[in-house]
Length: 200
Image 1 (cartoon, rainbow, N blue to C red):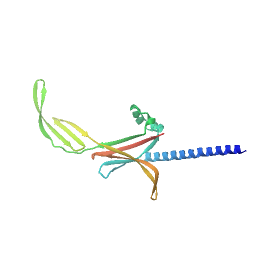
Image 2: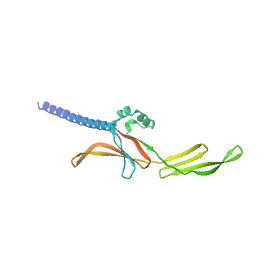
Image 3: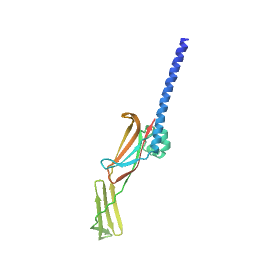
Image 4: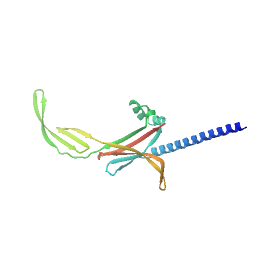
């Protein structure tokens, strides 16, 4: 009798432990799906930070590997071409920035020598150049055509941080993960940003 009672108590304890574990896993999955739904419906917040740099903030999208392959098939194919297995992927980030410059530059005349067969020809062209710390524009106006070279340098700094849950003045746990991106080039506007974290 005592042996059956002990067996019954052990089985009940084991089932209760499995039920509690399943409940905890289900709650974590519900929380992940809720955060994913919120991240999908959330738009990137575009702003200027205290240093005057263009910045963007967006909530982190948390996907499982199978969800990532299904929902972001193009990104998954690109990652595979790099020789990386999707199951080893920790996170994938995408940011789009646009650089727009409205400027005026002074033209100056110069003479260049061109060879046509064995004859040297002198040609007058107009050159222009404009530059700042981030962008360099060099151009040449000859006849009815313009040749231009534009070089732009930008640094995107990315930070992923957690937002804690709050009740009155108490902070605990993690409410959401958030990505912040800042561009050092003042001509750049961040158009789109997305951060996907894959989970097992």
